[in-house]
Length: 293
Image 1: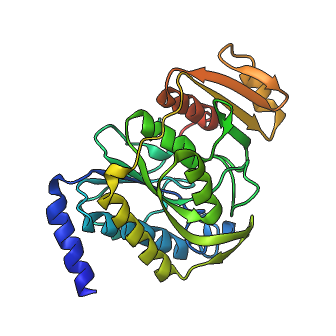
Image 2 (image 1 turned 90 degrees about the vertical axis):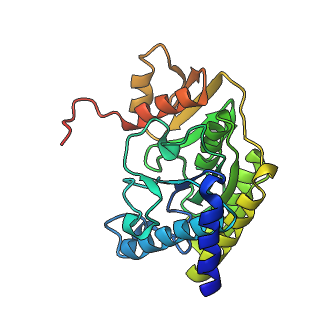
Image 3 (image 1 turned 135 degrees about the vertical axis):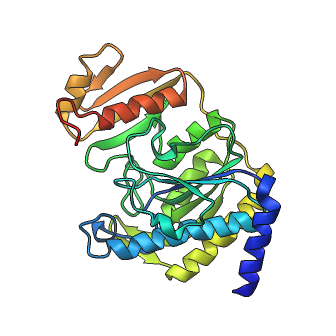
């Protein structure tokens, strides 16, 4: 423990001008998380898993700092965007919270950053495997495609980062998640903290073992940051979104910017990934006629 504290302190000193790291933290891929009982305020294990989620972020910060990282920004990117116990994070770290935000799960990301880390991520709704597999909205969407390729949240967010010239250097979650991101994004450090058995079951590491793994992988990722390449998709981009329900597709089809390609799917074009993200955020966030408290 003393050695770890000294290493982190040295990392902070070395990292004043070190690589700037962005961390986006989701929750479905957190160690041990398997059902809604861990993932939302009404779940009986939610408060415990908020601690695990925060501990995973802290482990990544420790690993990054031990490798010389400088500025770190953390985005709370699950559910209501208010899951991390922010008083348990280092006091020199800033946090992005709640919604909506134009870049969604990577809100606050900009060209100043040298690398991105995705923690607690999950596989896509198109994937046949993975714990709690979905893309952006488990209640509303059945598929999201970029230029005809089905993507997960991790791949979509990697494309936003890549457009800025920022590589994704590490991802954590279950085995299906790490494999899916790696298959498209390419070389990333993968921290597999559990192994999917079904949508609601996994063989999981002990939490402390997961924190150790994430710490080690983050350290390796920052130490070797020059080895990772930004993930870039061809622009302009074409986005296809398939919905579980008929009505939103019908209504979006009234607008000329959307092409209704079947009863449950729409397609739209965007000049950049940032523009594509803004449109997607609007589609999934707008609630016309509702008052704001």
